[in-house]
Amino acid sequence: MAATVRSVLKVSRTPFARSLVSSSRFSTTAAKNMNLKERLAQLIPAELENVKAVRAEHGKKSFGPVLVDQLYGGMRGLPALIWDGSVLDAEEGIRFRGKTIPECQALLPKAPGGQEPLPEGLFWLLVTGEIPTQEQVTELSKDWAARSALPEFVEELLDRCPPTLHPMSQFSLAVTALNHDSAFAKAYQDGISKKEYWGPVFEDCMDLIAKLPNIAGRIYRNVFGKGKLPSIDASKDYSHNLATLLGFGDNEAFVELMRLYITIHSDHEGGNVSAHTGKLVGSALSDPFLAFAASLNGLAGPLHGLANQEVLLWLRKMQSQIGENATDEAVKEYVWATLKGGQVVPGYGHAVLRKTDPRYTAQREFALKHMPNDPLFKLVGQIYNIVPDILLEAGKAKNPWPNVDAHSGALLTHYGLTQMQFYTVLFGVSRAFGVAAQLIWDRALGAPLERPKSYSTAAIDKMFKGKQ
Ligand SMILES: CC(=O)SCCNC(=O)CCNC(=O)[C@H](O)C(C)(C)COP(=O)(O)OP(=O)(O)OC[C@H]1O[C@@H](n2cnc3c(N)ncnc32)[C@H](O)[C@@H]1OP(=O)(O)O
Ligand SMILES: O=C([O-])CC(=O)C(=O)O
Image (cartoon, rainbow, N blue to C red; front, side, top):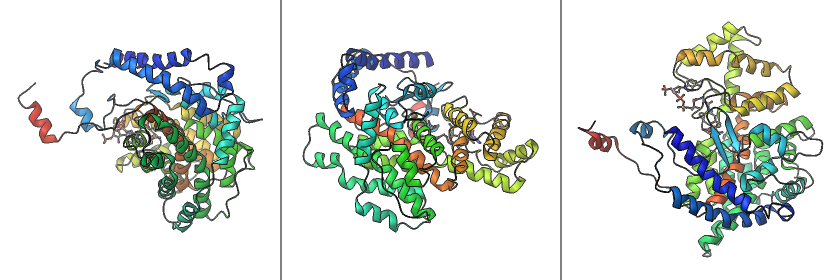
Protein backbone atom coordinates (compact mmCIF):
# COMPACT_ATOMS: atom_id res chain seq x y z
CA MET A 1 0.00 0.00 0.00
CA ALA A 2 2.83 2.38 0.83
CA ALA A 3 4.09 2.13 -2.74
CA THR A 4 0.63 2.93 -4.08
CA VAL A 5 0.37 5.95 -1.80
CA ARG A 6 3.77 7.18 -2.89
CA SER A 7 3.06 6.77 -6.57
CA VAL A 8 -0.28 8.58 -6.28
CA LEU A 9 1.39 11.40 -4.37
CA LYS A 10 4.04 11.64 -7.03
CA VAL A 11 1.42 11.83 -9.74
CA SER A 12 -0.59 14.43 -7.86
CA ARG A 13 2.47 16.59 -7.37
CA THR A 14 3.39 16.48 -11.02
CA PRO A 15 0.44 18.51 -12.29
CA PHE A 16 1.16 21.35 -9.91
CA ALA A 17 4.76 21.28 -11.03
CA ARG A 18 3.44 21.20 -14.60
CA SER A 19 1.29 24.22 -13.88
CA LEU A 20 4.35 26.11 -12.75
CA VAL A 21 6.23 25.05 -15.86
CA SER A 22 3.29 25.83 -18.12
CA SER A 23 3.08 29.25 -16.54
CA SER A 24 6.84 29.67 -16.76
CA ARG A 25 6.28 32.43 -19.25
CA PHE A 26 5.21 34.36 -16.15
CA SER A 27 8.01 33.14 -13.93
CA THR A 28 10.57 35.07 -15.92
CA THR A 29 10.82 38.83 -15.83
CA ALA A 30 7.12 39.63 -15.56
CA ALA A 31 6.56 37.32 -12.57
CA LYS A 32 9.55 38.80 -10.83
CA ASN A 33 7.89 42.21 -10.94
CA MET A 34 4.58 41.03 -9.52
CA ASN A 35 3.27 41.16 -6.03
CA LEU A 36 2.06 37.98 -4.35
CA LYS A 37 -1.63 38.48 -5.12
CA GLU A 38 -0.97 39.19 -8.80
CA ARG A 39 1.19 36.08 -9.10
CA LEU A 40 -1.40 33.99 -7.29
CA ALA A 41 -4.14 35.23 -9.61
CA GLN A 42 -2.06 33.88 -12.51
CA LEU A 43 -1.42 30.51 -10.92
CA ILE A 44 -4.99 29.74 -9.86
CA PRO A 45 -6.60 29.01 -13.28
CA ALA A 46 -3.82 26.57 -14.23
CA GLU A 47 -4.02 24.80 -10.89
CA LEU A 48 -7.81 24.50 -11.17
CA GLU A 49 -7.25 22.71 -14.47
CA ASN A 50 -4.57 20.49 -12.94
CA VAL A 51 -6.79 19.42 -10.06
CA LYS A 52 -9.56 18.68 -12.54
CA ALA A 53 -7.17 16.56 -14.60
CA VAL A 54 -5.82 14.66 -11.57
CA ARG A 55 -9.34 13.91 -10.41
CA ALA A 56 -10.39 12.77 -13.87
CA GLU A 57 -7.37 10.49 -14.14
CA HIS A 58 -7.07 9.19 -10.58
CA GLY A 59 -10.30 10.10 -8.85
CA LYS A 60 -11.57 6.54 -8.59
CA LYS A 61 -8.27 4.96 -7.58
CA SER A 62 -7.85 3.54 -4.09
CA PHE A 63 -5.15 4.22 -1.53
CA GLY A 64 -5.76 0.75 -0.10
CA PRO A 65 -7.89 -0.50 2.76
CA VAL A 66 -8.95 1.50 5.80
CA LEU A 67 -8.37 -0.52 8.95
CA VAL A 68 -10.70 -0.40 11.92
CA ASP A 69 -7.58 0.21 14.01
CA GLN A 70 -7.05 3.48 12.16
CA LEU A 71 -10.44 4.73 13.37
CA TYR A 72 -9.50 3.95 16.95
CA GLY A 73 -5.85 4.96 16.49
CA GLY A 74 -6.11 8.67 15.75
CA MET A 75 -6.31 8.02 11.98
CA ARG A 76 -2.53 7.45 11.75
CA GLY A 77 -1.48 6.93 8.15
CA LEU A 78 -4.99 7.41 6.81
CA PRO A 79 -4.74 9.33 3.52
CA ALA A 80 -7.41 11.94 4.04
CA LEU A 81 -6.36 15.47 3.13
CA ILE A 82 -4.99 17.61 0.33
CA TRP A 83 -2.20 19.93 1.50
CA ASP A 84 0.04 21.62 -1.04
CA GLY A 85 2.48 23.73 0.98
CA SER A 86 4.56 20.92 2.42
CA VAL A 87 4.95 17.15 2.50
CA LEU A 88 6.40 15.19 5.42
CA ASP A 89 8.54 12.12 4.83
CA ALA A 90 8.91 9.85 7.85
CA GLU A 91 12.66 9.44 7.33
CA GLU A 92 13.68 12.73 5.78
CA GLY A 93 11.35 15.21 7.47
CA ILE A 94 9.61 18.20 5.98
CA ARG A 95 9.93 19.70 2.51
CA PHE A 96 8.33 23.06 1.81
CA ARG A 97 7.07 22.91 -1.80
CA GLY A 98 9.66 20.22 -2.42
CA LYS A 99 12.52 22.01 -0.67
CA THR A 100 14.28 20.77 2.47
CA ILE A 101 15.12 23.12 5.31
CA PRO A 102 18.81 23.42 4.26
CA GLU A 103 17.66 24.14 0.69
CA CYS A 104 15.31 26.85 1.96
CA GLN A 105 18.16 28.28 4.02
CA ALA A 106 20.32 28.40 0.91
CA LEU A 107 17.72 29.63 -1.59
CA LEU A 108 15.35 32.05 0.15
CA PRO A 109 16.23 35.76 0.31
CA LYS A 110 18.01 37.02 3.43
CA ALA A 111 18.05 40.33 5.25
CA PRO A 112 21.10 42.53 4.53
CA GLY A 113 23.92 40.97 6.52
CA GLY A 114 21.69 38.07 7.62
CA GLN A 115 22.24 34.38 6.99
CA GLU A 116 18.86 32.87 7.88
CA PRO A 117 15.97 32.90 5.40
CA LEU A 118 13.33 35.59 5.68
CA PRO A 119 9.93 34.04 6.55
CA GLU A 120 8.41 36.44 4.02
CA GLY A 121 10.17 34.38 1.33
CA LEU A 122 8.98 31.14 2.86
CA PHE A 123 5.39 32.39 2.73
CA TRP A 124 5.82 33.27 -0.92
CA LEU A 125 7.22 29.79 -1.54
CA LEU A 126 4.35 28.11 0.34
CA VAL A 127 1.76 30.05 -1.65
CA THR A 128 3.30 29.93 -5.14
CA GLY A 129 5.85 27.12 -5.15
CA GLU A 130 8.42 29.70 -6.30
CA ILE A 131 11.44 31.41 -4.79
CA PRO A 132 10.73 35.15 -4.70
CA THR A 133 13.15 37.92 -5.52
CA GLN A 134 14.71 40.11 -2.86
CA GLU A 135 12.43 42.96 -3.97
CA GLN A 136 9.28 40.84 -3.70
CA VAL A 137 10.24 39.87 -0.17
CA THR A 138 10.95 43.49 0.76
CA GLU A 139 7.54 44.48 -0.59
CA LEU A 140 5.93 41.76 1.52
CA SER A 141 7.72 43.06 4.65
CA LYS A 142 6.39 46.53 3.89
CA ASP A 143 2.88 45.28 3.14
CA TRP A 144 2.74 43.35 6.43
CA ALA A 145 4.09 46.34 8.36
CA ALA A 146 1.36 48.51 6.80
CA ARG A 147 -1.33 46.03 7.88
CA SER A 148 0.06 45.40 11.37
CA ALA A 149 -2.06 47.70 13.57
CA LEU A 150 -4.64 46.05 15.84
CA PRO A 151 -8.16 47.40 16.25
CA GLU A 152 -8.31 49.33 19.51
CA PHE A 153 -10.86 46.94 21.00
CA VAL A 154 -8.50 44.00 20.46
CA GLU A 155 -5.75 45.87 22.29
CA GLU A 156 -8.20 46.54 25.12
CA LEU A 157 -9.30 42.91 25.12
CA LEU A 158 -5.69 41.82 25.61
CA ASP A 159 -5.02 44.51 28.22
CA ARG A 160 -8.00 43.27 30.24
CA CYS A 161 -6.87 39.65 30.31
CA PRO A 162 -5.55 38.63 33.72
CA PRO A 163 -1.84 37.79 33.52
CA THR A 164 -2.80 34.39 34.90
CA LEU A 165 -4.65 33.56 31.67
CA HIS A 166 -2.31 31.40 29.59
CA PRO A 167 -0.69 33.34 26.72
CA MET A 168 -2.12 30.84 24.22
CA SER A 169 -5.67 31.49 25.45
CA GLN A 170 -5.07 35.22 25.09
CA PHE A 171 -3.63 34.64 21.61
CA SER A 172 -6.66 32.64 20.52
CA LEU A 173 -9.06 35.25 21.94
CA ALA A 174 -7.35 38.07 20.07
CA VAL A 175 -7.23 36.20 16.76
CA THR A 176 -10.89 35.25 17.08
CA ALA A 177 -11.74 38.90 17.72
CA LEU A 178 -9.97 39.97 14.49
CA ASN A 179 -12.90 38.35 12.71
CA HIS A 180 -14.68 41.67 13.44
CA ASP A 181 -12.97 43.13 10.35
CA SER A 182 -12.84 40.06 8.14
CA ALA A 183 -12.99 40.96 4.46
CA PHE A 184 -14.22 37.45 3.65
CA ALA A 185 -17.02 37.43 6.24
CA LYS A 186 -18.22 40.77 4.90
CA ALA A 187 -17.95 39.72 1.26
CA TYR A 188 -19.88 36.55 2.04
CA GLN A 189 -22.67 38.55 3.65
CA ASP A 190 -22.67 40.78 0.57
CA GLY A 191 -23.22 37.73 -1.64
CA ILE A 192 -19.77 37.17 -3.17
CA SER A 193 -19.58 34.43 -5.83
CA LYS A 194 -17.75 31.19 -4.94
CA LYS A 195 -15.24 31.87 -7.68
CA GLU A 196 -14.14 35.06 -5.94
CA TYR A 197 -13.69 33.66 -2.40
CA TRP A 198 -9.93 33.50 -2.57
CA GLY A 199 -9.51 37.28 -2.99
CA PRO A 200 -10.91 38.38 0.40
CA VAL A 201 -9.50 35.23 2.03
CA PHE A 202 -6.07 36.28 0.75
CA GLU A 203 -6.58 39.76 2.24
CA ASP A 204 -7.64 38.27 5.60
CA CYS A 205 -4.64 35.93 5.61
CA MET A 206 -2.27 38.81 4.92
CA ASP A 207 -3.92 40.85 7.70
CA LEU A 208 -3.77 37.87 10.05
CA ILE A 209 -0.04 37.27 9.56
CA ALA A 210 0.68 41.01 9.68
CA LYS A 211 -1.10 41.52 13.01
CA LEU A 212 0.44 38.57 14.86
CA PRO A 213 3.62 40.35 16.03
CA ASN A 214 1.53 43.07 17.68
CA ILE A 215 -0.63 40.46 19.38
CA ALA A 216 2.34 38.36 20.50
CA GLY A 217 4.28 41.42 21.68
CA ARG A 218 1.34 42.79 23.62
CA ILE A 219 0.69 39.46 25.34
CA TYR A 220 4.37 39.08 26.24
CA ARG A 221 4.65 42.57 27.66
CA ASN A 222 1.33 42.43 29.52
CA VAL A 223 1.85 39.02 31.08
CA PHE A 224 5.51 39.42 32.01
CA GLY A 225 5.49 43.13 32.92
CA LYS A 226 7.82 44.22 30.13
CA GLY A 227 6.51 47.75 29.63
CA LYS A 228 5.01 49.56 26.68
CA LEU A 229 4.93 48.06 23.21
CA PRO A 230 7.08 49.93 20.64
CA SER A 231 5.80 50.57 17.11
CA ILE A 232 6.37 48.45 14.04
CA ASP A 233 9.13 49.85 11.82
CA ALA A 234 8.06 49.67 8.16
CA SER A 235 11.69 49.59 7.01
CA LYS A 236 12.41 46.37 8.91
CA ASP A 237 11.52 42.76 8.12
CA TYR A 238 8.80 40.80 9.92
CA SER A 239 11.12 38.93 12.28
CA HIS A 240 13.05 42.05 13.18
CA ASN A 241 9.80 43.75 14.13
CA LEU A 242 8.64 40.71 16.11
CA ALA A 243 11.95 40.68 18.00
CA THR A 244 11.64 44.41 18.70
CA LEU A 245 8.10 44.08 20.00
CA LEU A 246 9.31 41.38 22.39
CA GLY A 247 12.18 43.62 23.52
CA PHE A 248 15.06 41.79 21.75
CA GLY A 249 15.34 43.85 18.54
CA ASP A 250 18.85 45.09 19.42
CA ASN A 251 20.19 41.57 19.49
CA GLU A 252 20.98 40.62 15.89
CA ALA A 253 21.48 36.94 16.79
CA PHE A 254 17.99 36.82 18.34
CA VAL A 255 16.56 38.47 15.21
CA GLU A 256 18.28 35.78 13.13
CA LEU A 257 16.86 33.14 15.45
CA MET A 258 13.35 34.54 14.86
CA ARG A 259 13.89 34.31 11.08
CA LEU A 260 14.93 30.68 11.36
CA TYR A 261 12.29 29.86 13.97
CA ILE A 262 9.38 31.26 11.98
CA THR A 263 10.60 29.59 8.80
CA ILE A 264 10.95 26.09 10.23
CA HIS A 265 7.80 26.03 12.40
CA SER A 266 5.52 27.32 9.65
CA ASP A 267 4.16 24.17 8.10
CA HIS A 268 4.25 20.40 8.66
CA GLU A 269 1.88 19.08 6.01
CA GLY A 270 -1.85 18.90 6.67
CA GLY A 271 -2.57 16.19 9.22
CA ASN A 272 -1.07 17.74 12.35
CA VAL A 273 -3.61 19.07 14.81
CA SER A 274 -3.18 22.81 14.16
CA ALA A 275 -3.04 22.57 10.37
CA HIS A 276 -5.89 20.12 10.07
CA THR A 277 -8.06 22.11 12.48
CA GLY A 278 -7.54 25.31 10.51
CA LYS A 279 -8.42 23.56 7.26
CA LEU A 280 -11.46 21.88 8.80
CA VAL A 281 -12.87 25.07 10.29
CA GLY A 282 -12.07 26.98 7.10
CA SER A 283 -14.03 24.39 5.14
CA ALA A 284 -17.22 25.62 6.82
CA LEU A 285 -16.33 29.00 5.27
CA SER A 286 -15.49 30.38 8.68
CA ASP A 287 -13.12 33.24 7.87
CA PRO A 288 -9.31 32.85 8.29
CA PHE A 289 -9.34 34.51 11.73
CA LEU A 290 -11.87 32.02 13.10
CA ALA A 291 -10.14 29.14 11.36
CA PHE A 292 -6.70 30.05 12.63
CA ALA A 293 -7.94 30.71 16.18
CA ALA A 294 -9.15 27.10 16.13
CA SER A 295 -5.67 26.03 14.97
CA LEU A 296 -4.19 27.86 17.94
CA ASN A 297 -6.45 26.04 20.37
CA GLY A 298 -5.09 22.77 19.01
CA LEU A 299 -1.51 24.01 19.04
CA ALA A 300 -1.98 24.82 22.73
CA GLY A 301 -2.17 21.11 23.63
CA PRO A 302 0.86 19.50 25.36
CA LEU A 303 1.14 16.68 22.80
CA HIS A 304 1.39 19.31 20.03
CA GLY A 305 2.78 22.87 20.19
CA LEU A 306 2.72 23.25 23.95
CA ALA A 307 5.46 20.60 24.06
CA ASN A 308 8.12 23.33 23.74
CA GLN A 309 6.91 24.81 27.03
CA GLU A 310 6.72 21.31 28.51
CA VAL A 311 10.31 20.53 27.49
CA LEU A 312 11.64 23.53 29.37
CA LEU A 313 9.49 22.80 32.42
CA TRP A 314 10.74 19.20 32.36
CA LEU A 315 14.38 20.30 32.02
CA ARG A 316 14.07 22.81 34.85
CA LYS A 317 12.42 20.23 37.06
CA MET A 318 15.22 17.82 36.24
CA GLN A 319 17.82 20.43 37.20
CA SER A 320 16.04 21.18 40.46
CA GLN A 321 15.92 17.46 41.33
CA ILE A 322 19.33 16.22 40.22
CA GLY A 323 21.22 19.50 39.92
CA GLU A 324 22.94 21.15 36.97
CA ASN A 325 25.79 19.20 35.34
CA ALA A 326 24.19 15.93 36.44
CA THR A 327 25.79 12.63 35.43
CA ASP A 328 24.36 10.52 32.62
CA GLU A 329 23.28 7.99 35.25
CA ALA A 330 21.24 10.60 37.14
CA VAL A 331 19.64 11.84 33.90
CA LYS A 332 18.74 8.26 32.93
CA GLU A 333 17.07 7.73 36.27
CA TYR A 334 15.07 10.94 35.85
CA VAL A 335 13.91 9.89 32.35
CA TRP A 336 12.85 6.47 33.64
CA ALA A 337 10.99 8.11 36.54
CA THR A 338 9.09 10.23 34.00
CA LEU A 339 8.06 7.14 32.05
CA LYS A 340 7.24 5.11 35.15
CA GLY A 341 5.08 8.01 36.34
CA GLY A 342 2.91 7.48 33.25
CA GLN A 343 4.10 10.70 31.61
CA VAL A 344 5.61 11.32 28.19
CA VAL A 345 9.14 12.61 27.64
CA PRO A 346 8.31 15.95 26.04
CA GLY A 347 10.07 16.80 22.80
CA TYR A 348 10.55 13.15 21.83
CA GLY A 349 8.51 10.96 19.53
CA HIS A 350 6.34 11.89 16.58
CA ALA A 351 3.17 10.68 14.89
CA VAL A 352 4.84 10.53 11.45
CA LEU A 353 8.60 11.11 11.74
CA ARG A 354 10.83 8.11 12.39
CA LYS A 355 14.17 9.97 12.49
CA THR A 356 15.54 13.06 14.21
CA ASP A 357 13.41 16.00 13.12
CA PRO A 358 15.41 18.18 10.66
CA ARG A 359 13.92 21.18 12.50
CA TYR A 360 15.75 19.93 15.61
CA THR A 361 18.94 19.65 13.55
CA ALA A 362 18.55 23.16 12.11
CA GLN A 363 18.19 24.57 15.62
CA ARG A 364 21.17 22.54 16.85
CA GLU A 365 23.27 23.95 14.03
CA PHE A 366 22.16 27.46 14.95
CA ALA A 367 23.17 26.79 18.56
CA LEU A 368 26.55 25.37 17.53
CA LYS A 369 27.18 28.58 15.62
CA HIS A 370 25.87 31.11 18.13
CA MET A 371 25.96 29.56 21.61
CA PRO A 372 28.11 26.40 21.64
CA ASN A 373 28.94 26.70 25.34
CA ASP A 374 25.45 27.39 26.64
CA PRO A 375 24.74 25.05 29.57
CA LEU A 376 21.12 24.37 28.58
CA PHE A 377 22.23 23.59 25.00
CA LYS A 378 24.70 21.10 26.45
CA LEU A 379 21.94 19.52 28.53
CA VAL A 380 19.73 19.22 25.42
CA GLY A 381 22.66 17.43 23.73
CA GLN A 382 23.21 15.17 26.73
CA ILE A 383 19.55 14.19 26.68
CA TYR A 384 19.76 13.42 22.96
CA ASN A 385 22.41 10.83 23.79
CA ILE A 386 20.28 9.26 26.50
CA VAL A 387 16.54 9.41 25.75
CA PRO A 388 16.28 7.45 22.44
CA ASP A 389 17.84 4.32 23.96
CA ILE A 390 15.50 4.51 26.94
CA LEU A 391 12.41 4.99 24.75
CA LEU A 392 13.51 2.02 22.65
CA GLU A 393 14.03 -0.07 25.76
CA ALA A 394 10.65 1.00 27.16
CA GLY A 395 9.31 -0.36 23.88
CA LYS A 396 6.23 1.76 23.26
CA ALA A 397 7.15 4.87 21.29
CA LYS A 398 7.38 4.21 17.55
CA ASN A 399 9.85 7.04 17.17
CA PRO A 400 12.48 7.49 19.90
CA TRP A 401 14.06 10.58 18.29
CA PRO A 402 13.64 14.27 19.17
CA ASN A 403 11.13 16.54 17.48
CA VAL A 404 11.31 20.30 16.94
CA ASP A 405 10.14 21.11 20.48
CA ALA A 406 13.11 19.38 22.13
CA HIS A 407 15.35 22.26 21.10
CA SER A 408 13.52 25.54 20.68
CA GLY A 409 13.25 26.49 24.37
CA ALA A 410 17.00 26.23 24.95
CA LEU A 411 17.62 28.77 22.16
CA LEU A 412 15.02 31.24 23.41
CA THR A 413 16.27 30.91 27.00
CA HIS A 414 19.82 31.66 25.89
CA TYR A 415 18.78 35.11 24.65
CA GLY A 416 16.78 35.90 27.78
CA LEU A 417 13.33 34.86 26.62
CA THR A 418 12.96 32.62 29.64
CA GLN A 419 9.17 32.67 30.06
CA MET A 420 8.30 29.23 28.72
CA GLN A 421 4.53 29.79 28.94
CA PHE A 422 5.07 32.17 26.01
CA TYR A 423 6.94 29.80 23.71
CA THR A 424 3.92 28.31 21.97
CA VAL A 425 2.77 31.81 21.01
CA LEU A 426 5.88 32.07 18.82
CA PHE A 427 5.09 28.67 17.36
CA GLY A 428 1.59 29.98 16.62
CA VAL A 429 2.91 33.09 14.85
CA SER A 430 4.87 30.79 12.58
CA ARG A 431 2.11 28.20 12.05
CA ALA A 432 -0.14 30.95 10.68
CA PHE A 433 2.05 30.99 7.55
CA GLY A 434 1.32 27.38 6.64
CA VAL A 435 -2.35 27.41 7.59
CA ALA A 436 -2.94 30.70 5.74
CA ALA A 437 -1.27 29.45 2.54
CA GLN A 438 -3.54 26.41 2.49
CA LEU A 439 -6.69 28.39 3.35
CA ILE A 440 -6.06 30.60 0.35
CA TRP A 441 -5.66 27.60 -1.98
CA ASP A 442 -8.61 25.77 -0.46
CA ARG A 443 -10.89 28.66 -1.28
CA ALA A 444 -9.27 29.20 -4.69
CA LEU A 445 -9.80 25.56 -5.62
CA GLY A 446 -13.30 25.35 -4.17
CA ALA A 447 -12.42 22.78 -1.48
CA PRO A 448 -15.66 21.41 -0.03
CA LEU A 449 -16.94 21.22 3.51
CA GLU A 450 -15.06 18.51 5.41
CA ARG A 451 -17.38 15.85 6.73
CA PRO A 452 -15.93 12.35 7.16
CA LYS A 453 -18.07 9.45 8.32
CA SER A 454 -17.97 8.32 11.94
CA TYR A 455 -19.01 4.94 13.35
CA SER A 456 -20.01 3.72 16.78
CA THR A 457 -18.25 0.72 18.30
CA ALA A 458 -21.59 -1.10 18.21
CA ALA A 459 -21.88 -0.43 14.46
CA ILE A 460 -18.35 -1.72 13.79
CA ASP A 461 -18.99 -4.80 15.87
CA LYS A 462 -22.22 -5.49 13.99
CA MET A 463 -20.61 -4.83 10.59
CA PHE A 464 -17.91 -7.48 11.03
CA LYS A 465 -19.71 -10.02 13.24
CA GLY A 466 -19.44 -13.50 11.79
CA LYS A 467 -17.02 -12.27 9.06
CA GLN A 468 -13.31 -13.11 8.93
C1 LIG B 1 5.16 20.16 16.99
C2 LIG B 1 4.70 18.84 17.43
O1 LIG B 1 3.53 18.64 17.62
S1 LIG B 1 5.86 17.63 17.65
C3 LIG B 1 5.21 16.61 18.94
C4 LIG B 1 5.28 17.32 20.27
N1 LIG B 1 4.83 16.47 21.37
C5 LIG B 1 5.69 15.90 22.24
O2 LIG B 1 6.90 16.05 22.14
C6 LIG B 1 5.08 15.10 23.35
C7 LIG B 1 5.81 13.78 23.55
N2 LIG B 1 5.55 12.88 22.46
C8 LIG B 1 4.36 12.18 22.37
O3 LIG B 1 3.51 12.23 23.25
C9 LIG B 1 4.11 11.34 21.13
O4 LIG B 1 5.34 10.89 20.59
C10 LIG B 1 3.32 12.11 20.05
C11 LIG B 1 2.03 12.65 20.62
C12 LIG B 1 4.13 13.25 19.48
C13 LIG B 1 2.98 11.14 18.91
O5 LIG B 1 2.06 10.22 19.40
P1 LIG B 1 1.79 8.82 18.69
O6 LIG B 1 1.76 8.98 17.22
O7 LIG B 1 0.60 8.23 19.32
O8 LIG B 1 3.12 8.03 19.08
P2 LIG B 1 3.37 6.46 19.11
O9 LIG B 1 2.55 5.73 18.12
O10 LIG B 1 4.84 6.29 19.07
O11 LIG B 1 2.80 6.08 20.57
C14 LIG B 1 2.83 4.75 21.05
C15 LIG B 1 2.99 4.79 22.55
O12 LIG B 1 4.26 5.36 22.88
C16 LIG B 1 4.08 6.43 23.75
N3 LIG B 1 5.05 7.48 23.47
C17 LIG B 1 5.26 8.11 22.30
N4 LIG B 1 6.16 9.09 22.47
C18 LIG B 1 6.51 9.08 23.77
C19 LIG B 1 7.35 9.87 24.56
N5 LIG B 1 8.01 10.91 24.07
N6 LIG B 1 7.46 9.59 25.87
C20 LIG B 1 6.78 8.55 26.40
N7 LIG B 1 5.94 7.78 25.71
C21 LIG B 1 5.81 8.05 24.40
C22 LIG B 1 2.70 6.95 23.47
O13 LIG B 1 2.20 7.74 24.55
C23 LIG B 1 1.94 5.66 23.26
O14 LIG B 1 1.66 5.11 24.52
P3 LIG B 1 0.28 4.29 24.78
O15 LIG B 1 0.36 3.09 23.89
O16 LIG B 1 0.34 3.98 26.23
O17 LIG B 1 -0.84 5.21 24.41
O1 LIG C 1 3.34 16.87 12.26
C1 LIG C 1 2.86 16.75 13.40
O2 LIG C 1 1.99 15.89 13.69
C2 LIG C 1 3.30 17.60 14.51
C3 LIG C 1 4.38 18.56 14.14
O3 LIG C 1 5.55 18.23 14.18
C4 LIG C 1 3.98 19.87 13.66
O4 LIG C 1 2.79 20.13 13.48
O5 LIG C 1 4.87 20.72 13.46
